[in-house]
Amino acid sequence: MDGLRWWRRARARVLTVVLAVLGVQLSWLVAPAYACGCGAMVVDAQHRISVSSEVSVLRWDRGQEQIEMRLTVQGDADRAAWIMPVPHRATVDLGDPALFDQLDAATAPVHRTRYHFWPQDGDWPLTTGDDTAAAPPGAGAAAPPRVGVVDRRRLGPFDVARLTATDPGALARWLRTNGFSLPSRLNDALQPYVDMHWEYVAVRLAPESADTALNGALDPLHLTFEAAGPVYPMRLSRLARTPQSLGLYVLARHRMEPRTAIGGERPRVVFAGRLTAARGPLARLASGTPYLTAVAQEFPDPSRISADHELRRTASDTPYQQVIYRDRLLTVAGIPAWLLTTGGSLAVVVSVVALFTVRRSRRAVTPPPPVHPPAPIG
Image (tube, rainbow, N blue to C red):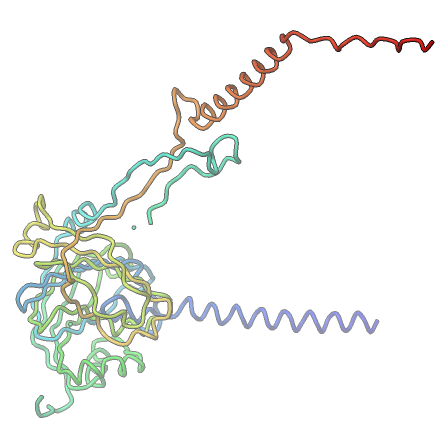
């Protein structure tokens, strides 16, 4: 009986711990997504939205920067606000979705076949494995705390406001007045931009139907602004609760690279080269900046993101393109070359041994000398 009571108490403790762990995990899953790759996504407390994919292209030429981005979102919110800090006043227009398809095609890896002599996993007679190839793939006196609305207009599904703010609290009040609550921790993340006198592009995302949740790929937005140097705002991504990935296309006159890792893993170049046959929206955007660099980076711990990505020219314009190899066993007329080689060599050895044995057996055998009995003594 004592053993039964002990077992029941132990089972109750284990169940309590399991439920507590599940509760913590669920609280992370349903928490609103406040950050995406280069801005902050804000929704009301009753809904959830996340940025499942963000693709951006940055064009830099003689003090002018353009950023075109496309977000793919998921969640149950029927509206949301997205905030983008910019170093100077920006113009905002709708982008062209075809641009991103062209960028994908221009930077696609090259597929090549390479042959190996000795059998590998998946080749006879070794264990059969999976025969698939995987792709590797931006002073003065302080103004009264307030938000200034430079202008506000409708662009497709977006309600776009260009804002100035002298402190994060003023920006929070503007958002709250327009129906959205700003998490307090975002105030601290915005403070460096306020100190640098940056401005903001606030975007309200709302589908055409009021009862339709925001889901899927949104129309791209195109921002143009002046900048002292090429910069990709990343500081707000430190608020993300899950690991972040950065995929950035850079159009310039030369090959470009991030100056530092800003708290993430080392940035890696997945494509670098001059565009020689671009057409349509990619040709228009690349005019005067024909060198395309594609950069990828992982942020396992977004809280370590310490700055925005500043870009610089590399020492040389060496081109680079990913290569995906498909390994094949070298064959001759459908027969593995290793089998022909080793089998043929073995056959030669066997033949030589056999020939040597036959010749040896055919040699004349010299009989031993006769043994004579000893002569009698007499």
